[in-house]
Amino acid sequence: MIHLDEEGFSTPVPLRSLPNRCPDVQSDSGIYCVVSAEPKPTFTEESLGGWFKGRNPSVEIDLLEAKWVDGEPILYIGKANSLRKRIDQFARFGRGEPIGHWGGRYLWQLADPDSLPITWKIVPDPGNAEADFVSDFVERHGVLPFANLNRPHRKGTEK
Image 1 (spheres, one colour):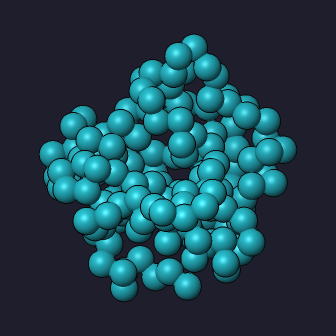
Image 2: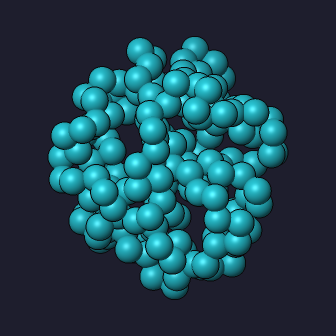
């Protein structure tokens, strides 16, 4: 089981508290997680996420309900070559800007996504670290985290 506090992740901060350009986030490579302690979420019909390339990020509520993993605090796992840049893009997408951060978009249909905490960890190989964390999640639950839409693979492995 993943225990973010034992894995060297930063202290979680609410997404709404991240200022533009995320100056307090390191620019190093790493992975990040969005978490929640909410047992039963409320979803909205329309996403707060930006319409990137004219595409509506909203999905049906039935799909969101089916993707929810009861009792699991980790909602999304992402990777970044620059944590500061990627987390800034992620937060800006959630504020409705047309940013290319389509991954994690299900989060922006939660009733209060800005209160969700985000945490990050510096790692030299974010692609493999993300694949390992997602694989651990899948081993425990049999499904991807709520807002992860694809399973990443370690470099040099078959898809």
